[in-house]
Every structure is written in structure tokens, then in C-alpha cells.
Image (cartoon, rainbow, N blue to C red):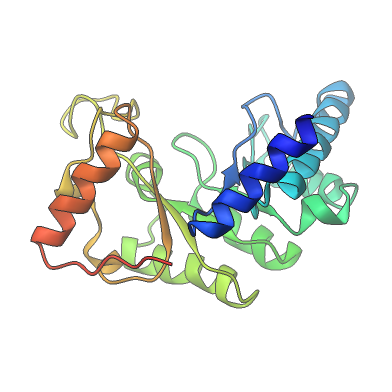
Length: 219
């Protein structure tokens, strides 16, 4: 019965051109120095791989985790543990820059080495900059998808209390259209809206972008 419901999700998503992605919780950490955490993370990712296969999701998006006082060593563990994943997980796995630890510049070499795409989160990049411009980060992230022949996926959100306060990380209800990077205009990619108002925020952003003359692609 469960498989039938998941199969129905896959059929509906394909019929309506809806791209599905999964984002495991923060306790899934392939860079952890603790064996128990890694083993649990591998099991959870294998579960997500099965779920993605049954629903037709093509992305399992993951953060790199903590630095644990030694970022290069942590990323080395991530590379090692990535090799332990099944093929159905590896071909769907993506890495996303976060708002405190791992930047776009940190993750690009890992993505290139492992042959996995980078999900570029522009809000996180603004909170945790690395010297790359938004244009350069977008271009480099695009390449990680294009070399695999896959449609890129980016993230957008706005800070709840604005950019003037010290903590700009919490997400707002809606997206401020001024936060949408100009270099994304007319870009053929999936842009996932991370906002508290959910679908209402998506529709509002669509209206705002169309008023600015931005072309919105649909399948």
C-alpha cells in the first residue's frame, strides 16, 4: 500500500512537471568524527535513496556538517564516507553551502572531485561569504550541474528581520524580490523558495519577478 502511494506521487509529479527533492535532517552528517553518527547517517541516506527512487525525486540535498576544529579533515571524512553510499544515493546526492561553516568555495572542490552538484543557497552565501561574488558562485555552481547534464537547483530566502541586524539567518515569511540575484534573471534552473509562507511565498515571488520582466520557465 505504501509503495502504491509513493508510485502515485511519482506519476503525478511527472505528469505535472513537478521536480521533487529531499533534504535530510541536520543530524545526517557524513563529516562527523563519531562512528555512530556516521553509521546512522549512512542508514538514513539509504532510506532517502529508496524514498527518492519510489517517488521519482532526483535530488537528496545535504549540508557538509561541522568543521570539528579541522575543516580539511572533516571534508576528507565526507569524501571517504560518500564512497560507502549506494549508487542510487550517490547519483542523487548534492551538497549545499551553509550559513555558518561551509562556503561555496569550500565545497566546490569536493563537488568536482566526487562528481556531485552544488546547490547554491544565496541567502547562506550572504550570511557566510567567501570572497566569491554571487555571479561567480552561481556560475561555478551551474557548472557542477551542467557537466552532469542535469538541471541546476538553487535556493532563495530572505532574512526575517532584514539585513541590518546581526543575525540574518532566520527565514522570513516571504521573499523580498530585491533579494533575488540579478544574475538569476531568465536562468533555466529550479529555484527552491525557502520561506515560512510556503506556496503563498512562491506565488508572490512569481508575481514580483514577472512584473520585473523576468522570464519564468515551466516544464
